[in-house]
Length: 79
Image (cartoon, rainbow, N blue to C red; front, top):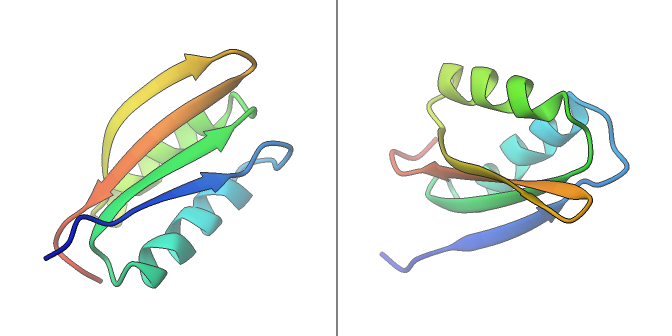
């Protein structure tokens, strides 16, 4: 299967909106691939990992880049 990756720029949105957009992104990817979430909401650093695990996503990394955070999330099993 091809390697699929999306960048989801949710800067300016408050959680849980970025998480909802993350779920929609994985639906477009048919449950397989990598999504990089760009956010400036600090709450997402705890909300996304917690809820991602509950629905079968894997948070690969979280890093600060300038004035925002990049949360990389992977899903392999399909929806």
